[in-house]
Length: 339
Ligand SMILES: NC(=O)c1ccc[n+]([C@@H]2O[C@H](COP(=O)([O-])OP(=O)(O)OC[C@H]3O[C@@H](n4cnc5c(N)ncnc54)[C@H](OP(=O)(O)O)[C@@H]3O)[C@@H](O)[C@H]2O)c1
Image 1 (cartoon, helix red, strand yellow):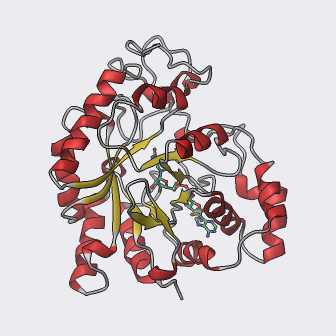
Image 2: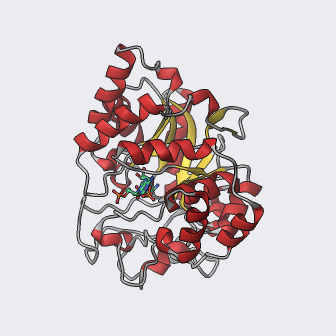
């Protein structure tokens, strides 16, 4: 049971290096404890996962670090066999090095393969806070502030603490403002991607910049936190089309979501604490691809159903969550956008 890591698809990045084409998420969604998540990481290493998507705000990096340490000690893997990603949280944009060093210490990792700017603005909200809560200190995106945070990660690359830079929760207008500013180009961008939210334009734009999309919530995140659930949301895996395709192959719709993701060219990072689920998620890369007909059918399931709306990051004066996503092609309230 499981997959030989050498047989997991590898994706070539813009600096010539490679990374695994599927990984495991580690956000417990306020529903699964740090112990449950880290226990699953231990199991995932044994069944062949090598890529892990971590973040300081998931509140479990020290427990996951203990798992990595035990795996090294038992000779299951070496540090260089793993591809460990983490992210700086919104309240640490002015203290990136300290935050990165804490993450590296917690994860017992020596260095990070990717360090992301988790959100492109420094707007902090308390973990698990109510969806209507607002922080009066929150601000709209600023090019100068973003680049200041980015430069701190570039310095971490120079120091050897970080191998690659990642960006996350970006939009095309924001990318256009910063894409000529960086000294070290990001290799990857995390964005929400699942059949009902394909973000085709942003996906294509990232590819045109040679930045690899990493798709979060690849299964439509059925266990996401309460604050990210609204009545209109669509459950990707319950769509009749997904169920029909899954029935044809005799698999769970989760497997179809992941096969679609890998074939489309994004790196999915599904989460599960259940061994049968996370094992079958990895094994989805080892079976024959979906047909063109199936891929075309899934392409029609786009419903612009963004699940992480991000309301808690709104600044005073913002109207609603749409303001975070620059839907009219301009960065809302940005104080220093170039024309
Ligand atoms: N950069 C960012 O801002 C950002 C934002 C969100 C998430 N992320 C990352 O993306 C990762 C994945 O997102 P996510 O955890 O929210 O959503 P997800 O991976 O789309 O969904 C996870 C859920 O799907 C179900 N599942 C998993 N494998 C399954 C299978 N084989 N069969 C049936 N059901 C299955 C599980 O629910 P049950 O327990 O019901 O089986 C699990 O809790 C996170 O863990 C995190 O690392 C990043």
